[in-house]
Image 1 (tube, rainbow, N blue to C red):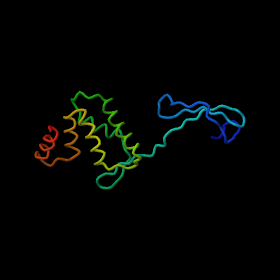
Image 2 (cartoon, rainbow, N blue to C red; image 1 turned 45 degrees about the vertical axis):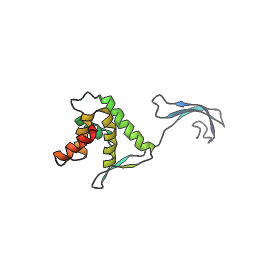
Image 3 (cartoon, rainbow, N blue to C red; image 1 turned 180 degrees about the horizontal axis):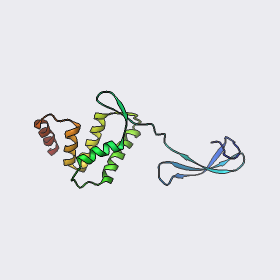
Image 4 (tube, rainbow, N blue to C red; image 1 turned 90 degrees about the vertical axis):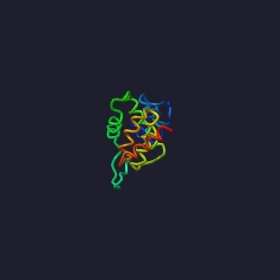
Length: 149
């Protein structure tokens, strides 16, 4: 890390701790050349997460788009926005922790269903009906039956 005062390329870490927002590591450094102290922040490189649609097109993962779908599935259910936001955050974190930069839309939908099933079964069925694109009542009934087991 280059010293902002003298330009020396050597410094030592004096103190290290999480930032207030917990999205970075705050490091106090001391220049080996001049002794000047300065702060740096180390963050994980955020590579855009891409969603590969059924037709092969790719679009950037959009938390708001997923939130709109979840809000539609949870309308008139007692599920807080914070719960849905955590669900989305958990899914995004899982994908990033696996090192994925692309996810198929069907896999993303499956991840949502797994988490939504534990939160609210009615919302799960509503989301599944759109995600799985049920063609008739029999498909819908099969999903309900598997949920009841």
